[in-house]
Amino acid sequence: MLALDRIGKTYPNGVRALDGVTLNVALGEILSVVGGSGCGKSTLLRVISGLDPPTAGRVSLDGAAITAPHPKIGMVFQEPRLLPWLTVADNVGFGLPKLAQAVRQRRVAAQLQRVGLFEKAGVWPRELSGGQAQRVAIARALVTRPEVLLLDEPFSALDAFTRADLQDHLLSLWAELKPTLVVVTHDVDEAIVLGDRVVVMRPRPGRVGEEIAIDLPRPRDRQSAAFDFAKRRVLTALDRAQDRPLSVDDREAETAAGAALWW
Amino acid sequence: MARPAPDRRNRWRAIALGLLVPVSVAALWELAVYAGLSSGRLVPPPSRIFTTFMELASTGELTRHTIATLLRVLAGFGIGVAFGTVLGALAGYSALARSLADPTLQALRAIPSIAWVPLFILWLGIFEASKVALIAVGVFFPVYLGVMGAIMSVDRKIVEIGRIFRLSGPAMIRRILLPAVLPEYVIALRAGLGLGWMFVVAAEFMGAAEGLGYLLIDGQQLGKPAQIVAAIVAFAIVGKITDWLLVAVSTPFLRWQDVVTHHRER
Ligand SMILES: Nc1ncnc2c1ncn2[C@@H]1O[C@H](COP(=O)(O)OP(=O)(O)O)[C@@H](O)[C@H]1O
Ligand SMILES: [Mg+2]
Image (cartoon, rainbow over all chains, first blue to last red; front, side, top):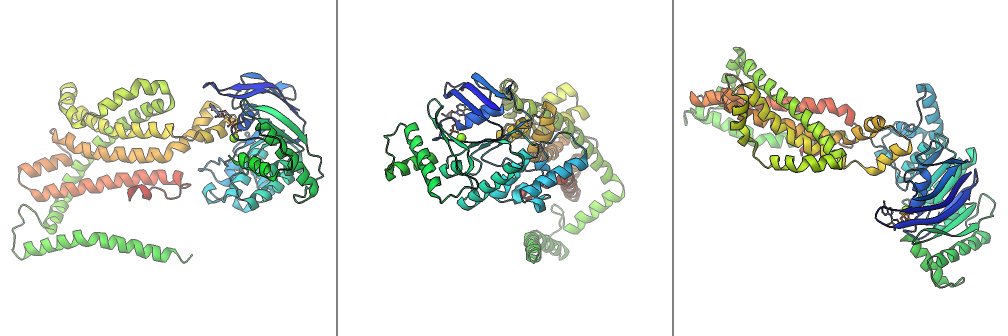
């Protein structure tokens, strides 16, 4: 289990990005994190990943404190961050520990097969589309078989069609090994398609506002009434988190919240 | 794959157009001298330059002078690159080292390097050491600036990929920093080499018993313009070859780039 115990993060410049964040994420659970821009979502993932240590509280994975990047915790950023001087296959294998060449090649090939990019193995990153590059980034993070995978707005730079495609793809990859996923997003649809639970964050300082369980069966139908209902709950919670007047059925408030999410 | 043909044709066309003016001027001058319109004593026609060049080459003179110059350039280049790389890497890597070294080096850079010549002669004598030192100074600055800039501009986001996968310090340098700075490093080396070739001329003007610069001075003092131009041609050829070697050595490591080095040359 991934446990966050009263996490606080104050940057050296005095910005309090997180304050008293307590969360438990069960093994194999998918947690979506939504919230307006600047409410500490990226900071939260960076703290969990061990890239930036918290200034208060403790992150632990199966009881062991996380203070630095950990082999069982993988991360996918908004940008693919592929190394331009390595081929796609070498990028995927970048994080694999020292292994026999043959074993390594087999694991990289199998992982590329899983993300549907087997035939791109020898290609340079610059030759990939945005969606393909992000799939390679996911393959690079998953090939080491992490217990926890953190994703920071992984599909926000992609067009709507590719985004929906990759959401489904991520779910099918998740179904194989069932790692814990923590997905930061500003897309409410994405949060609900993916998450077993949606955490809505409040800004200044970043705190957990509300937690909303999503009990819809998978695969989830983005058009269903139940999906719409869940969406309305999340949007309302987002409104509350932004300290806006409460207005459940007010279409205007909904679009305002939606717009706020994008910025 | 129907594309390369017109591309290549365009390139040949560009080369032909570029050669048109110099070749015509040379040919006209050759004709003018041949027709007796000018003696060609101060501005020798191409044929006379070629003859001089071949004479110098056949007696082994040209080889001897070229090697002398080449060795000076290589020695100065090696020293300049070594200092430039180490200091540039330190200044790029550590803010403290940058605060300590960079202001001084930037101030020194403001001095026209030829102004060092008298001091170098006083300190190092008029023979090889002062010449190599001058060349090294010329090579040092572009390499230092290039390495410092390249390291400072390494994408932090990519460094974080290294951190996520828990690379050790040496592994981070080998697997992330070196490949990331290599393209700019090659550009800096080429700039340094170019300056090395410029400075070797100045260095050999300080008085040299051999070297292509000596051929220049000798040609001037004895009134042999053909020898001067022949030496200039030799400078151009050897300079281009060394640059080309540098590119050839680095190209296999830079294949991942879109266009290897040509986009900087244009
Ligand atoms: N490296 C940093 N140094 C100082 N302040 C930062 C840094 N990173 C983020 N912040 C600040 O912390 C707050 C939360 O940022 P972030 O976690 O990026 O939010 P989000 O990902 O939700 O948009 C913002 O006010 C931001 O300006
Ligand atoms: Mg963010």
